[in-house]
Each structure stands twice: as structure tokens, then as C-alpha cells.
Length: 349
Ligand code: NDP
Ligand code: GDR
Image (cartoon, rainbow, N blue to C red; front, side, top):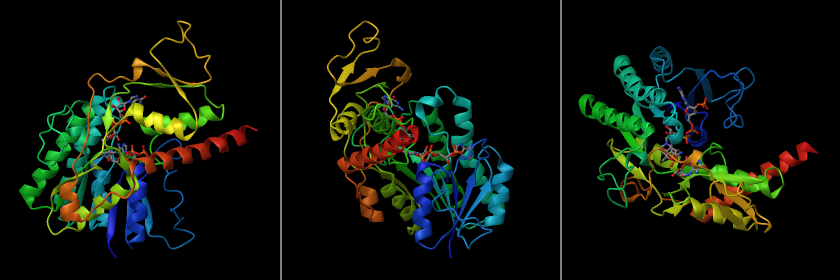
């Protein structure tokens, strides 16, 4: 039985990856952070109390800023595969906490790589690299050979993690891979990322639980896929004959505005777009349409305008394919958030 060790197991990708690995018969060990409230909501449905039943999923306290906890877990678990998914993953927030973001997203990776070296483990390593590395548009579609141009503290930290992963592969012949994943979403996406923010707000507005939605840059374009499809690519990278770096994307791009239009259309709600402060100027809606207002608070000091990936290498060398289309993703997320909003409404009585 293979053993996997996952950082970021409580996140969106960690939960889908855990499901995938358990379905393949792996024993899965996840590192979780101490938190004052429960942070295991995304994996509760697969977690079994080890006191009560046989389980193949084990959770351990640790932190990417604590090398001693990482080294101890590597020694105890001795994993065959490590997936480093843990991160301060919010691009906008990285401008507010740049040093912390570097501490976790950049140095966290080298702490694990060095831990592997020190313990002499023969383990395969996956680094969660990001399309944010491409940042300012140099060429499209973006592929493995496209130069990086990071545009945020988050992307700068991920650039370090990308290169240190490559460096340990070349220096120590380590089986270490970078998955350069473009945006991927799901009903488990964090509520402050734009897709989930939109689907959640649209559903809540429909049921009268919220009255409007504030967004930032509507013209940003992203290559959005489904997280459940993307964790399959992570696993395939670590099953290959040789370690390498791969772009994982759909090859389609859509704007934030387009995403919102599809979501509201699915719920049968016409949109009225308002610029910043227009409501206060008395141009408020009397049209019965849902108001989406621009709030510059959500603009970024430097924006990534256009992401569009070319997944040809992953398709060719890993046999990886996109299974979920963009409209299917929108439907899946919207329908899920409508169910949650209905539950919230019932709970309110
Ligand atoms: P999430 O934000 O949903 O999950 C992040 C995970 O990292 C959570 O489990 C979080 O724990 C954990 N974490 C945060 N800080 C620390 C820390 N100091 N020590 C240990 N763990 C920590 O991210 P996703 O699942 O969406 O993304 C997974 C990875 O892939 C991230 O590295 C992200 O940067 C990267 N990525 C994501 C893409 C996407 O579109 N989703 C695209 C490309 C890359 P807690 O639950 O306690 O907060
Ligand atoms: P991103 O995702 O920055 O691409 O990073 P996010 O959903 O936060 O933003 C996508 C685009 O939408 C614009 N936008 C808004 N974004 C947020 N969060 N909130 C808003 O109100 C809003 N309005 C417009 C943004 O400006 C941006 O252009 C995600 C994360 O998962 C990273 O960890 C990952 O590496 C990359 O995707 C690939």
C-alpha cells in the first residue's frame, strides 16, 4: 500500500486529492494547522475517528512555517509521495501579508525538500505551482516554455517554490515535479475567490438573504477548470517515468463578467451593473434587476489580465484530459450554492 503525505489537506484541492488517493487504495496522511475553530469541513465526510474504525486517513498537526514539525512527520510517516498544496493562496491578500506569504508559499516548499534530503527518503514530490507565475502577458496560450512575470507577492513566492523544486530535482536527482495549474474551482472553492463569491451571492440574492454583490475587475480573464479533474493530473505527474513540469489548463478563457452573467442567467435573474458609488448618487435600481456594483477595494495593485493555458504536454505525456466543461462547472457551483442558500433560509425560519 502506497503512503501519501499532503500539506493543505483541508483546502479545496486537498479534499479532492484525498478522495482520489483513498479510492486508489493509498494510506493518506495530512498535515493540518491548529485553529481556534474547526477547519476540516472539506474532509469531514471522509474522515473516520481512528478510535472507532479502521481508517486510511490520518491527520497530524504541523505547519509549513515549522520545519521541526515537517521533519518529524516525514520521519514518522515515510511517505512514497508528497503533495505540497499548503499555501496562503489568496493573491489579493498576499499584498496585505507579503512576508507571511513568502514564509509559507516559498520557504514552506524548501523546508519539505530539505526535509526529504535530510531524512534520505526516496519519496516523490509534487509542488503546487500556479499560472500566476505568468502574470503579465508575454505570450498566449501560456505553456511550459513561456517566461514567468509574477505580478504579486503570492506569485513571487510561488516562483521561488517553482525554481527550488527544479533545483532539488537537478541537484539531488530528486523526483520532484511542478504542476503549473491554471485556476480551478468547485463547490468547495473558498468563498472569497471570485467564482464562489459570485455563485454564493447570486443564490443568496435570489432567496432574499443578501441584496447586492460587490466585485472588482470584471474584465480579468481566466482559464477556469474543475478542481476534481485537476487533482488527477497531480497524481499522474508522480506516476510518470521521469519527473517534469506540466501546465494543467482547459485551453479556454472567460472574463469575470462572463462568469457572472452565466450564473445569474442560470438563476433567471437579470443584472444591472453599477459603477463605484452610483447607488449613493441616487442611480439605484428600480428595474427589478440584481445590482452588481464595482468596489475598487477589490482591485489589485498589479493585475493579471489574461490567463489561457495550453495543456498539450500534460495531454500527450500524462494522458490527462479535461472532463468538465466551463458551462458544467458554472452549473455545478451555482446549483450547489442554491442548495446551501435554501438550507440557510430554512434555518432562519
Ligand atoms: P486553499 O486555499 O483552498 O487551501 C490551502 C490549504 O493550505 C489549506 O488546507 C490551508 O489550511 C493550508 N495552509 C495555509 N497556510 C498554511 C500553513 N502555514 N501551514 C500549513 N498549511 C497551510 O487552496 P487550493 O486548494 O485552492 O489550492 C491548493 C494549492 O494549489 C495552493 O498551494 C494554491 O496556491 C495552489 N494553486 C491553486 C490554484 C487554484 O486555482 N485553486 C491554481 C494554482 C495553484 P487551512 O484550511 O487551515 O486554512
Ligand atoms: P486568482 O483568483 O487571483 O486568479 O488566484 P481570484 O478568484 O481571487 O481572482 C480572479 C480574478 O477575478 C478578479 N476579481 C475578483 N477577485 C476576487 N477574489 N474578488 C472579487 O470581488 C473580484 N472581482 C474581480 C481578480 O482581480 C482576478 O483578476 C487563484 C488562486 O486560487 C491562486 O491560489 C491560484 O494560484 C490562481 O488562482 C491560479
